[in-house]
Structure formats: structure tokens, C-alpha cells
Image (cartoon, rainbow, N blue to C red; front, side, top):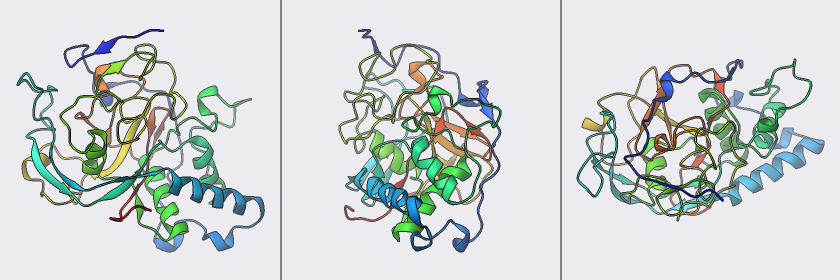
Length: 303
């Protein structure tokens, strides 16, 4: 078994925006008003009805409740007094207070996302009709590669089916959960460190994602917040947002042209999979095989 611990000094992190990624074009899924966000559960029949009801039950069961509280969001520096990262858009550290919420323990997988697209007569994500067989990394239990619109509308579809306020997590919700309610750590693993083959992929810059939940969760019970798929959040990106972010339940800038991704990806060096780096993308209707998501539930009591 390979075991190596990575600290904040190891490796040179290359931002996502500079990487050449494997891309499969995917039609935009920016759906219209509330009435267009998928079929209601009572209009789904037969085998699909059973599958959708199982998906709803599974989604609810996998929600982890996060008690609200205050923390210093952003890169406030490591115990040695030096910044965790070299970037400027994750500074200064600033006080954030969040209302309690829940978030999915796992990244949404292809099995669940394929059901969403099938029910709503949408094209499959990360799929080429020329393929004679499905790639291993696209098996149902692997995390789905999805563009921002697909991620957003999947969560809103779950909200429509359940009558509950599901959505993509805000950046603040994502970081609070990744840092065990605000602890000063660098990786969202079971022990705050990366150990290759133990709580992280067994090799540097893996060729494929891992099945969701392969490695141990962080202390709150969330899997793969560091590594596997980099994850979409709800917020628009702005270089200076941390300089004037509101304290209570920040939701990011009101407008923008780039959405934020958090947590790093299997295609990057281990150091890039930290809890502070904010990556961004303007191509919101393109799907990449290492770009995933999970949903949050915006209610202050456990589901």
C-alpha cells in the first residue's frame, strides 16, 4: 500500500483554468421557469416512477446535517503564520455566520444524473453516440461530469420533486463543511492530510475518478471534498469578493460571468485539492469528466 502524507509545501498547484481537460460537448440544460424544471413525481409512471422515488429516498438519506455557526472563511494562514496558498482571491479571511443546512455526503453519480436526463428527455452528459460501449469512468457508481447548468437544474429538479429547498451549495456552505465547521486545515480528509492510497487516490494525477465514497469521509461524514471531482457551487466569482462579503449567509456576487468550483480534481497535483483554492470557469454549458457537484438542502432542521 502506498502511503505518503502531503503538506502545504509540496507540489506546484496549476489552476484549473490553465489545464487541458478531456471534453465532450453537451447541449445546454438551462431550463426556463419553475414549471419547466422537470416532470412532477405524479406524472412519472411505471419503472421510472419506482426509480425516481428510490432516488428521492436515497438523496434524503445521504443528506448530512451541518449545524450553523461562525468561522473565518478564506485563507487565514497556516499555523506557521504563512498563507496556505499563493492566490489573492481567497483572502482576506473574513467572518462568516451560516444558518444550519444539510449537504449531500457524496458527489452525484452517473446513475442518478442519467435518470434525471432520461426523465426530462435531455441528452446524456459526457456521452458520445459513437462509443460502442460505456467508458469505465462513466459507470453508474462513478461521479458524474456535468456542466454548471446541469448541476444547478438537477438540484432544482430534486427540489421540485420533494417540495424541499434543494440547490447547489453556496461557496460558504461548501467550505464550512469541508473544514469541519471552520477548522484551520488544508485538506478535507479524515485527518486533514493527504495519504496516497489511504484517504486519496493512490497516484499523483490519476487517469480517472474513483467510485464515490472509495476513501474515508471527513469527520462530518462528507466524501471527496478534497479530490476526485472538482465541484460546482452556486456563487459567481469575483476577485475582490472576500474584501466586502457580508457576514451572514453570503451567496456571492449578484452577477458575474464565471462560476466557482471548489475542492480540486483527480487530474491535478494533490496540493490543488485543498479547501481554500477558488477555481472558476466561464464555460458554464460545457461538461468535463472531472467536474462534478453535490446538492445542499437549505432548511435549518435535519431532514
